[in-house]
Image (cartoon, rainbow, N blue to C red; front, side):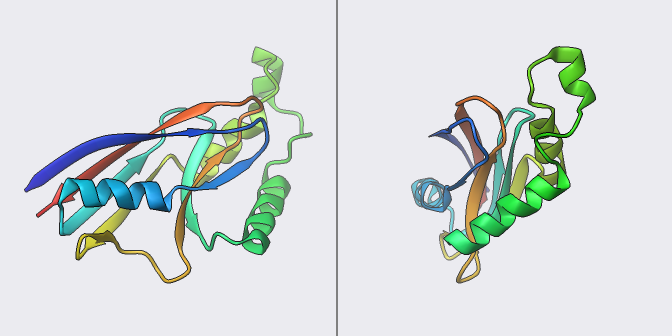
Amino acid sequence: MKVHNSKIFVDTTDETDIIDISHKVKEKVLQSDVDSGNIAIFVPGSTAALTTIEFESGAINDLKKAIERIAPKDMNYEHDRRWGDGNGYSHVRAALLGASLTIPVFNGEPLLGTWQQIVLLDFDNRPRRREIKIQIMGE
C-alpha cells in the first residue's frame, strides 16, 4: 500500500467563498501514482469546510442562500459576545458542513460524478490562506 501526503493552498476573501479545488486534488492523485484507493481531504481550522457540488453559478448561489438561511450572519452568536471577533456564524457554518471528505480513487482518478466537483468553503470574515491536507492511500 502506498501513502502519499501533500497539501494545497487556497487564498480566500472575507465573504463566503466557495472555490473549486477539484483540479488541484486530481493533480495530487496523478503525482501519487495510486491507481486504486482513497483520498482523504482535510482543511484545518474551525471556519472552513469541504463538500462536493455541481460547480456552476446557479448551484453555488443556491448553496450560499441556503447557508445564509441556516446560519445567518446577522444572528446573535454567543461566540461573538465572548470573543468579539464577529465570526460566530462562520464557526457554525463550518461545523454543519464538516472539515473533511473521503473520495475513492479508481483508475488513477478521483471517483466523482459527471457534474460533481470538490469545493472549499471559507466562511471566515477576513481573508485567509487556507492549507488543505491531502492523503492518498492505495495501490
